[in-house]
Amino acid sequence: EVQLVESGGDLVQPGGSLRLSCAASGFTFHYYWMHWIRQTPGMGLAWVSRIKSDGTFIEYADSVRGRFTISRDDAKNTLYLQMNSLRPEDTAIYYCVRGSRDWKGIDYWGQGTLVTVSS
Amino acid sequence: DIVMTQTPLSSPVTLGQPASISCRSSQSLVDTDGNTNMNWLQQRPGQPPRLLIYKISNRFSGVPDRFSGSGAGTDFTLNISRVELEDVGIYYCMQSTEFPTFGGGTKLEIK
Image 1 (tube, rainbow over the protein chains, first blue to last red):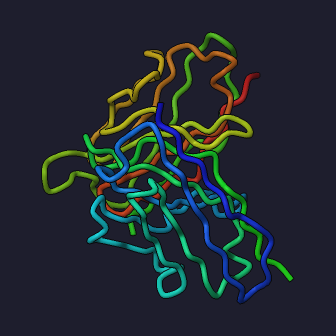
Image 2 (tube, rainbow over the protein chains, first blue to last red):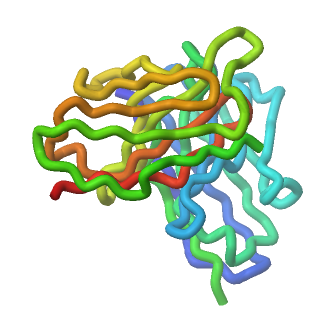
């Protein structure tokens, strides 16, 4: 069974930093692209970043480029999102999502972790 | 960015009756390989989104056959043949031809 378990969400002040983790199990992690997608009540769902299976290609949404860094540790089956210079508009539930191998898209979602940026 | 526009915002449906949700993309979703990367997601209350349909009309693993997708180019539809109580939630269209973008969601509720 595919499982994606996020952790690291917290309350942080504007300008602060946070690192999210996503522990993957139930599949061969290093075969898959991985994504971070966030959700807010006001702005809905928004893709944040993705990383290729071998880590050689990385892409970010304009809203986070230069502040967030995605990475992966295949030995630990773990995906990360380092978030710096956080802003109130980064407040959201952050989901770890697996990219599909059989079509150009995504398939399994984690339960999410809540990041709140507020003073 | 490809903009996804869903209608309606809300859909009250009687149990056992059909439901239909539309989605329009701001540009064609046909990819360079000929595939159309149009997807539908379901989010039940208190749950993360889950994939229902990929590449217009393919049901993902475990998705009941009362769910079906159709469309081409820029116009797509999700149909539920007979709505059940467990179908209550918010439905999102999502394109993955470019980096993923999502529709604003359609809330399915029971009359």
